[in-house]
Image (cartoon, rainbow, N blue to C red; front, top):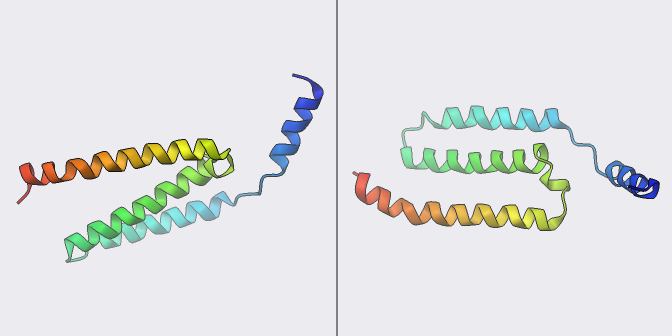
Length: 104
């Protein structure tokens, strides 16, 4: 690697914004506490929906900040999003069969 390439790498990393990981961690802890509180709701379907929505938000926070996906090139983010969409399609495609076999 040439010295010019090394210099380019240094300037690239210094352009990134400083992320407050403690604030993100606190947001994740608050979301965890809210999820645990929602588990005690009498309306089970509403509780499950809200808990899954919070889990999705927490997953995106972890992926974006702790895995540094927010600072990566767009094609990596598109690849990750495509994988998550395929997983969601598979999940929601299998749910009717699972409910049919194991449902009430």
